[in-house]
Image 1: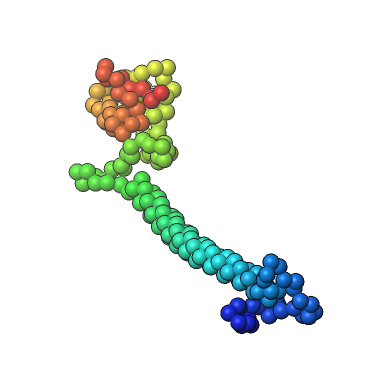
Image 2: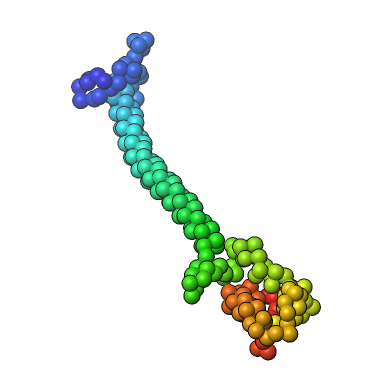
Length: 185
């Protein structure tokens, strides 16, 4: 920048050819050139200030976006670990026998969207298949006949009745008020 009188001018505005700028309405060429340079300099300075403010805003937004992205990545990792842990716990719960009266018993899970029939012990799977193959609701005696149990002895049917009730309590079967069992629709 050059200081000429009270006017600031850039070096590029100085005439390199040496031709003077014609005076307009009583102003000298240097005064006009000085005014134009001054206005251009103010415009450039104002625009540069706007751009710097915009750059600061964008840098803040970018920092916020990156921070949120980092938080989401951490949340995703936590969710994956929790899912793996829950899957492991569910798998161990399916095969872990419980103790009742000193005897090992297999726990029957509640029926759900993620619990497959194959997680049930084979005896319970056969009971479900026997109820399914019947034309409608069945009595305990009918299930016993399909499974090949001695249905003439009432005491032989009581364990089967307990299994049917257990399956009904956990949502695998539906027990009707008259004591018959059916599958869910």
